Amino acid sequence: MKERCALILIGLSFIFPAGAPLMAQDSFASMDAEDDPLAPQNPQKSTFVWCSAENGERQEFYISDVRRLSVANNMTVSSLSGHFAQTMNARFGIHLAMNAQHCHMFRSSAAAQNARSIVTAEVKKKNLTIRNAGIF
Image 1: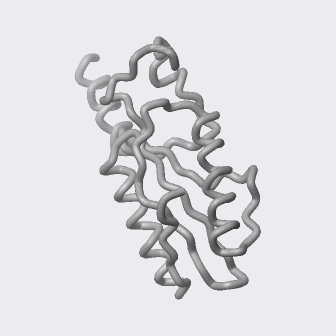
Image 2: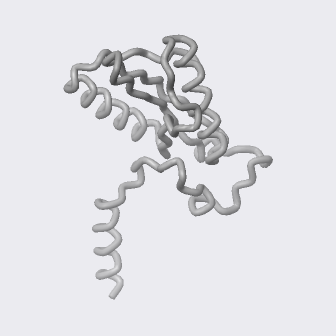
Image 3: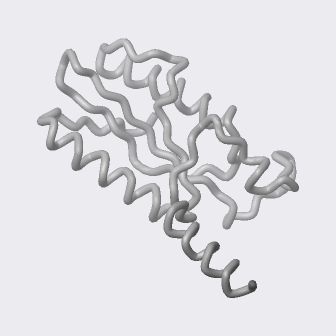
């Protein structure tokens, strides 16, 4: 019975890898229920985020570098998405929705970098111009 459970867990680890991206609407309470935003943060429990948006009219794709957030909650990432949209709108004169979810969260830096690389490769296939978001 133990071997069967172990095989099931191994199989599930291939389907749902630990480095899989978290959607912004997912709750971090399921990851660490005892986390308190006011408590000192453990660096190992950081979240890694990068933001992106596509402008089809100009054939441009805006993407940021990976950032580490010590506070991992939906409100922080939503705020970061709004800040990203505001900065891109001001810097490039476009009209990104302020309340849209532009940022993507990951549990590890490697997963975030990997996902960012995959998206960048897909954007290059679409023949869009990639614009670095810079500091926002």
